[in-house]
Length: 167
Image 1 (cartoon, one colour):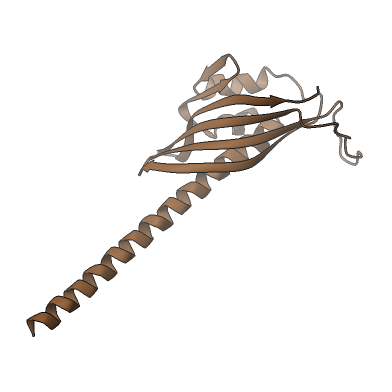
Image 2 (cartoon, one colour):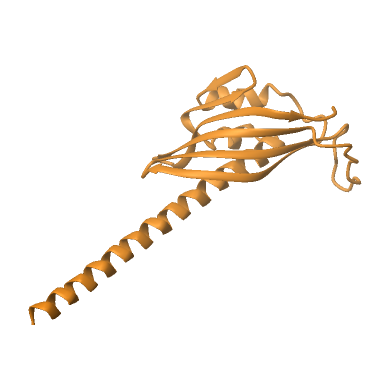
């Protein structure tokens, strides 16, 4: 009788731990998707020079490091996009790879690769596509994510150029 009770308790304990592990895996998968969505938003808002939405992918005190420039806080990040001026030539980020590591309930890190295409003219609605001679750049993005009161945001993003193509 005791053996049967112990076996039953072991099985119930195992099932509870499996359920707990499945729950953790689901939460981690959800965080990875949310972080990847932040990077997709980053790329789209950057391509379209949407300064407000671009800045809002970052935490209030987020950090953006591009080349030798460091921009701290949403206002500085917004100003960085505004300082680029009016869109002159077509520009497109194409994220290809994301490796997101969950560090804790409210922190994650990511390593992403992106190709950057650039054109020699703007593209208006109805225009034919721009012929591209090659990839303008291939970059590596080191990103720290944090869970804020607003949800998951980019705490720090550092762009590191790896390859440069024709301009």
